[in-house]
Image 1 (cartoon, rainbow, N blue to C red):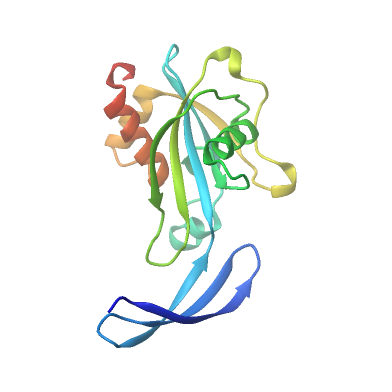
Image 2: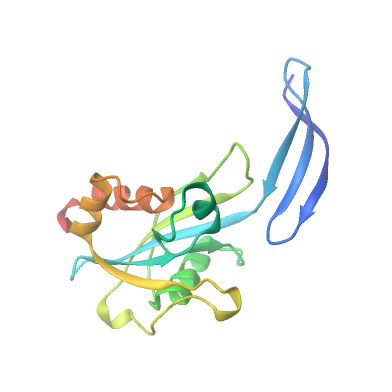
Amino acid sequence: MAPTIGGTRIVHDGWSRFLVADITLADGSRIKREIEDHGRAVAVLPYDPDRKVALLVEQFRPPAFLASGITSLIEVPAGLLDENDPEEGAKREASEEVGVTLGALEHVGTVWSMPGISTEQMDLYLGPYRAKDRHGSGGGLAEEQENIIVREIELATLAAMSDAGELTDMKTLTLLLALRLRHPELF
């Protein structure tokens, strides 16, 4: 018998939504699990193959601060998917957060970000751009209070940061590793 969900109840509905699910496992035992119902998201690593740099964001993340006192993280542009097409969502996030217009994207994968607690699936992309594709300073939307600092970082520096364990955001590390595997000539 396959596991079944007998029902869910909402325990919080705000910036995130939290549910409690009543689950019957394959062996017939019953459990309750809390689920953060987040939905779909996208992330993209915009990189300039001519100048061998990437555009990333640096921002304060309250959960990381609460867990370990980290005051900011270096990350790729990412966010919740508002569109039906994940590629369009990735392009929108890159435009809003780092001020670049991306063309064709290279899909890396569709992954579960935290399958033990969250419903979030994230589409990951590599996004080449040229210097002429920069259209603004980025920084995110004011109404979302993201307080983003845009960082243009050399790909070789990012690789060294990765090797030293200094990139601690999983989507960023995954996309950088994918870029290193697929386009090693850039490093």
